Image (cartoon, rainbow, N blue to C red; front, side, top):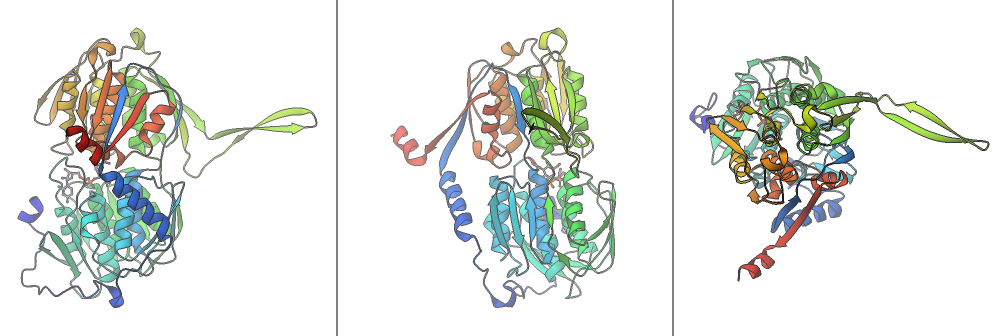
Length: 519
Ligand code: EPU
């Protein structure tokens, strides 16, 4: 692992005492309020983890109607970790999608002694006032990449932390060198021991403001350093940071909690550290990757659907590609509500325009009226950091391109191993040639002849979504295993597709049943 070969400012001479604050004030992590509801949910999730989930998709149909977009997974994960910065008052979050990844993040926070109350409907309240540990549960951290983000708030607030190396989708080496070099620039001393990263403030008190240039605009490193710098003593300047909307959303949350951050959404952040941050109410942005996936669902089935809420500015590169292929995308304006009012015996309709703070709008995506009777054109795409085309939509777009006219090329430049779906798409009949990080896709003129259903396996979250989309376009039945990957990042995925008219069903077989079957 790159990180292990060149650890930043390692301190081999540093003694390795047990963490002073491993259990702050000598208390074990305390039980959580609303414990029963949350614990039950976790128990259900665990019971389900033993089951084999498959999605069975009968392809060939069209979609129609309107679908809701959930809150952003990656913004929610960063904000949940960022809530650890708030030493007074709870962070009341709205728009947190109910996903296995967000539940794992809640488990990480609970393992530190934070109170996390999942109220349903996307509302999650995090009270990190009485954190009792600076060493989160390693098993939970090993399940999601974002678990590692707690390192920033913990070391900034308590002067020390010990966090296991992170997990997440296996789409590349995913080193953490930038996180650690950045923390070192803020006065942290870092050691790697037994698969854990141990970070201490060199001055024994807390982090201090500093300057750090990221070699690559890493989303997670930017988010971790932003939270750390928000509580450091003095001013921090971070350059070549990630500009993803999820990073900007975290900045907005921290500012709502009292942080002083300038430059969110640009390449340079100037952060004036505060002694304390406080809880606040906050709404997570809509998930641009889920929105993009649903837009591809419309395109690959040559259908017309609408979706909301979205922030069109976050979808520019996605809309450009779909439009180039021949889809029509119409912005439906701000939230519009028609209300019928009875005046005497007359029913009068008032049209209320609701302007939300973030100007959420609906989009209509149509592949019906494209040239040549729904025959979409192939194109070239290269994944890049925002505002470039998102790597998290590369597999879904590749599925679409197998049904588009001509030769298309997809170049993956963000992760070095994000092509697991190619082999599965090939099983469905896709003509794809892989060469390094580029895929050459020879699309078929008629989508009905491009793909034909068979059993396939999801190896990661977005690749799994791509297989569902391909199954919806394929002739016959596609059975997708490895659905737990999809459940990490799409809230009610098959329910949403069902509501649009897709023919999709979840098959759950418990281990015992499977074993009976084998016997
Ligand atoms: N990188 C380094 N050193 C580091 C950190 C990253 O070299 O210290 C490299 C990575 O190896 C990779 C590139 O930088 O090649 C981009 O990684 P980045 O750190 O930006 O990604 P991340 O923070 O690990 C987040 C999302 C991913 C999304 C990427 C890129 C979360 C929880 N995850 O990951 O989301 O693909 O940014 O936009 O925010 C997904 O939702 O399916 C997903 C994988």
